[in-house]
Length: 84
Image (cartoon, one colour):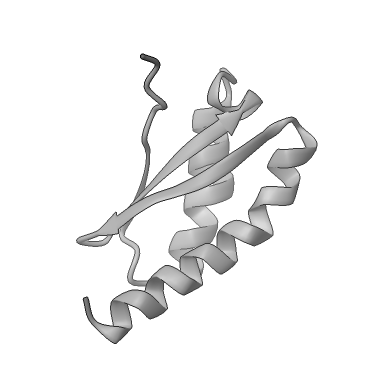
């Protein structure tokens, strides 16, 4: 992986750390899963993983913020937590 890739990952994680306190206040959290080919994959945890409004949080709070601040990210998607 290139230096630029790791710099982008670092920027993503910094932005997620800014968002996390608001989610934690509501009993949830967010986790970095993967970044490849401009697509950032995230997973909601806790209450956020089961919230009916999580798609709104993803689209308007997280994706909007990440896309504005990190041009290398072209799309943000949610990865659902699997239950075994």
